[in-house]
Image 1 (cartoon, rainbow, N blue to C red):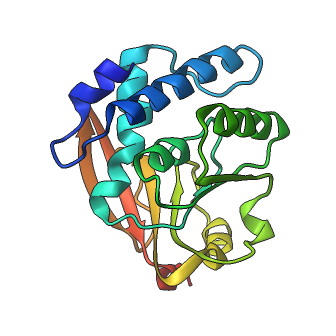
Image 2: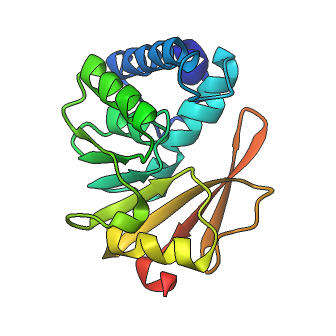
Length: 196
């Protein structure tokens, strides 16, 4: 997977061999757990390199700053690849499902990610303190769901919604289109003040 990922990275986004190795280790762990806990439908390394890892890193090219919260982290996307690529930024993985939380805690420990915390909670629970950036691949679309995200982000921060380009944009967001290995993807960028 890591060799495929390296081919997909733009020149502006360089990862060290150690970072690529950590992402490979995460992928192997994900596959190991996937038979017991439904973490991903993607099991092909080439597809995973693009649609999981390269896609997760897209927000870095659009002003992502820490501290970061990954809402509905699941198997750790986009939070774990971002934490690996941005070791100086604190990343909190928020996930409500116990089995997935167990996987995330195991992955964070095995990968030695000192900049990552795992929180078993939901968006509606609210944060202890707001973050500069919220990233999510979960599909938040109703006004109530979007409103629940507002307390998680500083007023000067940004929300990053990862989408297939065929999905409707998040209301009031600015859409950025990009290509990942022939698949058209989108980041919908939204300021917290636009959630009200």
